[in-house]
Length: 375
Image (tube, rainbow, N blue to C red):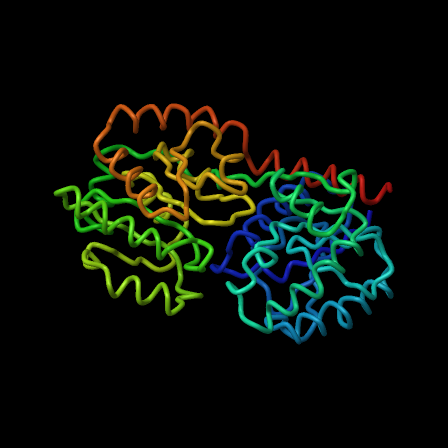
């Protein structure tokens, strides 16, 4: 087969959720299918590390697609012209963007439709682009893959896509995430949290990640508990809104909040493995990879009781109402005070993590590819 792949989100040292999905699945698929040929479409210079096997040909198409106007130009002119000239068996797009003017079979990986539910969480121009084009992408796609049963049901409801055309391809977790010894945890705490225990959040500081309520919940926790526990925030301030900023400024215990920015994979793994608990409480999520990362590091998890997160966490996390500061704060108190609860969650997390891996993700995505090509 000749498979063309949209790899514009494979960015050296800047992989986010969809970028990691692209990296981990393609690394496996290209190596496992040496008789198939893959063309990776980049919108800028690429790193050689992303050429996972000899059956990959990289192509750079201009312009750099980092704005809605350039999204349109890249997919509807640069990509469409290439696909219509090359005539591959499949165009695979891990970020869900289709080429509406292309005439080949296309597989879209649509991770979630948060913008349909919370349109004000993205800028005006991006919102207009998503709301106009993603319904068209969904109907243009020969098949759709998505990362949870929740997202599948949402795509069906929002866009009227037949369930028979949507495959669930769960996310996985980086194999380097694992528990570490107590002595190593002590060193990590000295490096990142002033030697103190800490609650942890991992992710881009986007409004839907619910950082404002997490700040408020941490303030309530600190007010009720006499402790030196910190809140460590790992992620870049891509969407540091006025609401998030003002909530932080008004915190009583803001000096106990530590921002690390983006961390290397090794540092991230160690920080997760040393945390008192992962406090990951978005109000909308297509999957929630940090939940799995915590399970793999033997770290207890507090997460939201809505959208995809109960599906991912099962019974291995404390589920909270993300719209209730009290609910989040009470879970933090519970985790902090009850070692038996922490140990019980860790044990359940060890079982739950067996249900997810990037190997399983790659296998499921390949099966979706075959269904698309053979449809």
